[in-house]
Image (cartoon, rainbow, N blue to C red):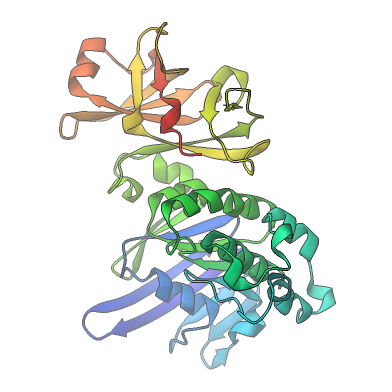
Length: 357
């Protein structure tokens, strides 16, 4: 599916949104950029909450806006989830979930309460009042309500921005599962690299009201100058299945030839394909497989490229045995002393506590 966007919108001399692009829509598309770059304004235009003269919005074969033609939000069949939940406080969780479901014609219902409540693990919350829920639970209910109108497109405006770090960590597996299992294409606004790296299939980079580029997540994370790396630094995302934890609380991740061990994984992530985010600065490289060392993850990799130094730090791009990209950040001195070069097999040493699953 393709989302065609044409919009020119100015707010005085301080800001102008100027977009003329076609976005491929499948999986999760992230609108990424710093605050004030136009992400939310663009999302509101897509939703029909912002009517811009002269704009063109076309979703697949549906013309939502062009000239005098304008299809309002309720006829676009879009699900919306914002930073702050918009649940109805006088209704129970169950009645909030059913509010849109009951108003959706039976012929258009593709998602139903049992599968959605199971997907978001909110079956035990159905009889509670909204004020009895934690922030993460409220946001999961908001996601469920948006899904139960069986939308053809789901728009998320920084859905985790109002949550604390621990709650974000708890809700991330549910968002990931929803993106993988619901079958609904998602456009997500975010300025947090970790959210994009964990959830997105494609990234729309925005700056000063314009779309700079549209890249797959793999493309966005394969270049050292990626905007995703500007604040927190370079990172890698490995995809694989997370197994059952052992008695020590550590779970196997990935195939035997590229096996890693992940501690304290959430129950929602177990026995599923997940993404494991690893900061490049948390990876060391060794020419040999070291023994008698507390670091449990010794991953055999092949160096693919060594980038020019920046502030005496060098980014080394490696390829795992199952073909995934792994970035390590080491000093210029380490590269020189170890004689690192492209095509060389080395061991990537990763502390288990560095994993962000």
